[in-house]
Each structure stands twice: as C-alpha cells, then as structure tokens.
Image 1 (tube, rainbow, N blue to C red):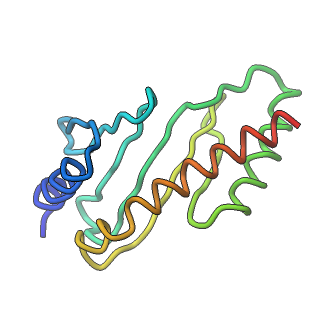
Image 2 (tube, one colour):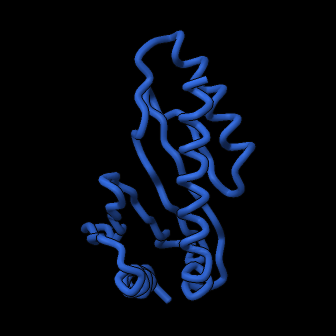
Length: 130
C-alpha cells in the first residue's frame, strides 16, 4: 500500500472517529483537537512507520528555563509509553512514533497513541509548574 492509499485509509478512519482534519500537499494529515494542531505523518519509503507530532507547544525563553524544560521532557518521556518530548531549537515538540504492520493496525492503536501523546504533554506541563 503506497503513502497515498495509507493516508486515504487513515483519513477515512479519522472522519469516522469525528476528528477535524485536512490533508496537506505532502499527504500529511493536519489534525485540530481542542484548538491545538497536530500532524500525522506517513513515510513514503517505510510503510510500517507512523508518527503523530505536536510541534512547538512550549517555547524556551531563557537559559534558566531550558534546564527545567529539558528535565521535564526527560521525565515525561520516561513516564509515558511510546511518547517522546524533546527540544527543537527553542521550542518543545512531542511525538508518538510507532511501527505497524498495516494501516488497519494503526487504526487499532491510534486513539491510545494520541492519548499517550496528550498524557506526556500534560505530565511535562505539570513538571514545569512544580
């Protein structure tokens, strides 16, 4: 199954689940949930790879904050299954990255994966507010 077919199948699933989304020119899915923007990417070369991205959800405004942010990111990543929180320049991103043998299996784990991503972000924010 090529990337276009996988994107179409995933889009059909998201529509059935009631998500608000659009597909960009590269066939990535731009998902809007609770006023936040997420991206779902499918790899052209690796049809088993699937990723949900929550980019730029926290900015790093000082060197002092960077240390706290990096520590919170490490804790959130360690605490949450499959989710990663990391720095990209002066911003924080969160992702869930998995391998799946088929797009049907992605559908089976999508909601749990998306929940894990949100859990990691919530954990990260709670750590920073301590």
